[in-house]
Length: 434
Image (cartoon, rainbow, N blue to C red):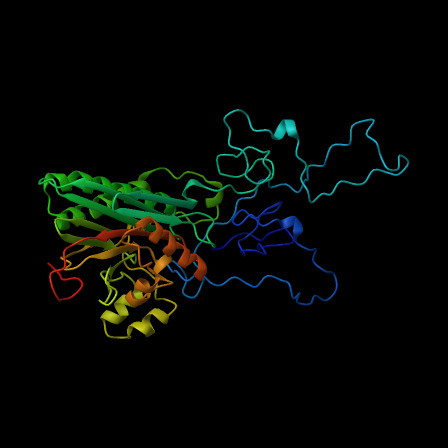
């Protein structure tokens, strides 16, 4: 991502290395207090032992990301483009002083003054979580101190009967570009159907957060309409992915909206990936476009787990073509370049759908690469899943998100868990195609 030269002493945040704007008092991405950064020494600099270590490169690559470079991210928006500091008002007349003859101490320009009258938010306005005095503007920044406010999508959780999902912004991105939808409905015979849809916005595209939200919502609504009508679940999943693609395509037709945190982003078609699962009539249906995944983890851990999806990615293509083995392909810096996505600039859309008939109870894990980057193989994912996740799916999803955050949280993290309950029918594979 190219951008104009900065005129501040610091061009990157010492905490998260996001680009800074002239006049920033706090980092718009992580909230780092820039007033606490020591001044640059005038003599020959040495490396301070307490200097924060450099951030690691993003591990996720999109189709437009440069090989070897960090994943695309937005530049933080500063509260003010000027160099002026608001100085504290003088003490009221009559205020006692330790030495009346001594000159008044100069105000510290690093600390913005808070005018209790001007900064107090009007009735009904949102109050800043940092300074507790300023009101929050429409871009999510405090008008008094400039601190970025937590967004509703920074962390989301939902539990609905036998399905639960958790989504988190992660530790490196300044917003959550993942989205999910979980729901339940009934088939014409009255038996239940459970749905989980997970979408991952393509960071190098415009408005990836809107794309993922639109796709998840459209796919979920399509399934809630088609399943009760008696549409076969696999056909219903195929149609739902097409409906999601149409919803994302429609975003490209909307006039571009100027958003402060998008001013450095190249404008192109919104895009996202999608993966979903349906449990209905004893079947497990999986559908996807992109590199988000579905894993199967048997309740009886003596049985092997399995990955039920194949990535639309550069690495998967190399393995399928026999040019590399899986270890070599996923170690390559191009591994996560996706070859399939939803969006107006996508190639021929080819939704993948597969139907399974499990012969034993297990747990279905639907997730973005923000999780599976830290538990890539089926065995690693099964090891990260709590033993009681089939009984406590929300807790299990929380633990898995925590696993990704503990691993570094380089990307947004979203996971949905669907416990699949069946009566054991003897020996056999954990999952069989129908």
